[in-house]
Length: 530
Image (cartoon, rainbow, N blue to C red; front, top):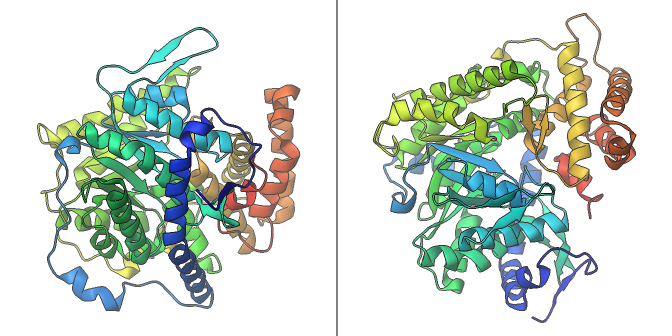
């Protein structure tokens, strides 16, 4: 290795020398030099699109790809080793959580380097070591109480979600340039784990987040093809499910599948980021004002249109349609809250199974049975329902953009919840936790993004609460003062100080209360991480 150097070489992490071996760093250097220029071009294209939308343009299906959308073609067929995806569990790459997720009984486990992870150097490097051990079957963990955790005989299929194209890994630079977080996460996983998985007859499965254009999918496809060649692996071993979690991507589902057709494993309805993206994309338009987060369900018109089109598109192209995250989690203290959570998860998954989805996501093992039962009923002995064609329905641009038809109100309780959740999540994130149980919901970066962008949106458009008050920055600061005092009293001084409250407040005010709306909360907070 000639030019690769760690930007902050004094930062340590478990098994750093193994994960960041000379050969691994050479691989990362190669992948950076080959693909970084195109990544930068695509991010610039995102900025140009955002500028045109801010100037009054709208979104629509691309006229230049109409022929592709209308003609018949199919993606590569699913692999035999992962035909049944009826429930997948997601979570960070923490060692204990990886073991528990793989043992959960879910069909798949998505190890998340993105929204459920705070990208500290420790988390990113140790997470890669945990994946190596998981594939080798040697992963174990002993808790402070002496309890030992090991893999069972039957484990979930491993899937990895690298960071999105927009994020960087500033602790590793090539020629002075930080590596893309996506290429760092994927590159290390591919280098250390792809051959291990192939030797065991398994595919290399991935989830791809935050895509906004089919050319971004083409870049991923080229990364996969190059990596397979470089590592001596068969073409098509790497299979990616794309999260349709940005509003622009909803208009390019066919195109995204086509670009990845040899490496494709379907689309996922990334509901929480999709709501955030909808707010962000048309932030300056009052007709895109949304009510309380809890009112924006999957049954409101613009969300129903998006999921119907996703199922229809995937099955027409012979690939998986995956449902969204069930963020509800059980309560250890309140059995009634647990029962309500399980019932709500089951109802949500009944809707998805009946719509034709092939599987879904959960965030906690205790809701597995509630999510699994509806898919068992819909699928029976079949592994999926890809060949079940959705009823023909013309879902046009107007339906995808019909945000104004969303029922609901903007309430003091909804505003206060957004303030509290956003503050607490930022505190967890700065402390190294990317997924946190808050008020019986598993909150991650996507749900926190909704909270802070809604606050900004309501202030921007002088939204009125049900009681007639206008939402202002001053009102939000008053609520923030109150919520900070309440949280401090609840957790105690030691925990409060460890949560970096002053820095948390600065990040909160920057991402929710300033004149401009930062594209991603995590980009602002990242500068404060080790």
